[in-house]
Amino acid sequence: MKYFYYSGCSLEGTALEYDISTRAVMQALGVELIELDDWTCCGASAAEAVSELLSMVLPARNLALAARMDQDCDFVIPCSACYLNLRKVDEHLDRDEGLREKINAVLQEEELSYKGGIKSRHLLDVLATDIGAEMIKAKVNRKLSGLRIAPYYGCQALRPYGGYDDPEEPRCMEPLIEALGAEVHPWPMGAKCCGAGLMTTKKEIALELTGELLKAAKGADCIATVCPMCQMNLDSYQKKVSQVKGEDLRISVLYLPQLIGMAFGLNAEALKLDLNMAYTDSLRTKLKN
Amino acid sequence: MSEETRELSEGHAEEDLMAAIRENIKACMQCGTCTGSCGSAYAMDFTPRQMWRMVQLGMVDEIFNSRTFSLCSSCYYCTLRCPRGLPLTESIHGLKQLAVAKGVAEKKGARFYQTFLDTVRRYGRVREMELMARYFIAMKSPVLPLSFTPLGMKLMMKGKVSPEMPQFFRPGKLDGIFRKVKELEARS
Image (cartoon, rainbow over all chains, first blue to last red; front, side):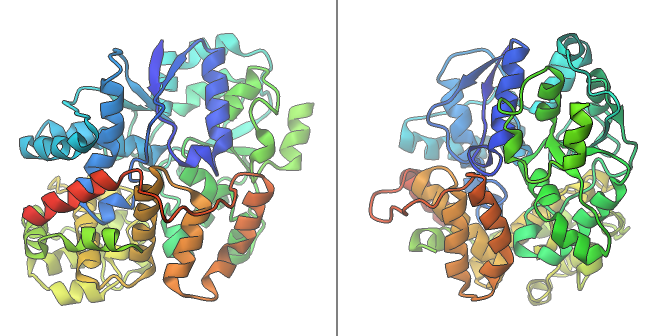
């Protein structure tokens, strides 16, 4: 199994532990990740708010870099916003010939071109669909017994494109969590919005949305995430959210590959657990025993 | 914000963009599923359903004087559930583009987006620390940085963001692409 790997900008900075744990878990599973040396930003949610064409060209540039490498494989993308943006290109190319021409006219500036056809897939899709619970279970040598994990999917991993799970009531993380020997925390919030970029521009709303999520996670030991933006909104503002909501809402929030890596017996350094903003002492103690 | 990025957003044919959004929303039957699905609706002055009616009626000033479209977090619930299958989230992106182009988006959102894209043009990738520093400068608010200070400190202590020297005087990594996009958008 091999994939083009598009880590995206967040995974070089605030979500470094997501990048490192993803690579570690993929290596343990024998999955090859092909790097694109010269990759650039996908435009995040900024390009689409300023220019339609730019929001297509920025992700398309990365697809064009992959197309040039002449390898027959899909992209695997851990960040939900990057995933949405890269996938958007092919969704639009198929129904808009004029757009295809415009994108390629711009890419020509860097002597690149993209005809379409490379599949962009979310890391969660690859873990749940291609790799699957059985293959993950076979690698588990340190079960996460007694751990109750709330699966959090967020928005853009599922909507508008998804296709590998129900966009309103996703379930695909559950067999993976069970494969690790952990228990699923049942909650109705898996596909609800964390507020995303509103945490920067309209903080009071994002704090409200995040607060509802953290409240519903009570009773779980940990929330599992698959997006750097969701992760940051859930783990970095817990003190503030607790103030706003008037109750203690602190809880561990870890990336799904970090939890998988723990069950594979990888150590804290290999999974960069020291970089997490919300990895509580109670969870640490529980994992030690 | 650099001239390059500002001009990029001004290059739009504003009327065409508004016409395209109206065309997208033409079949809206005002059922309100979008409003019922929106996590931010509680904080809006007009609900999403009301805003789409305003789009149908061409009430441009009212739309851009309201904060409704700027509160969209792109969760795509409305798009998923719209019984008419209308591209609602995409149309909100169109309204955000128009707000930037019209210069009516002198709000945090527009400044943030433009500062963001300018660091992308310059370096190809986002440098989070510099992005936030330049966003604070663009906002000219003495108190805004304070609300992010605790997080910034935590991130720095974890070694996740590092203060890097901005490189204002060398050509940007994606200058060519940004220039060409602007040129094509001015033509359309």
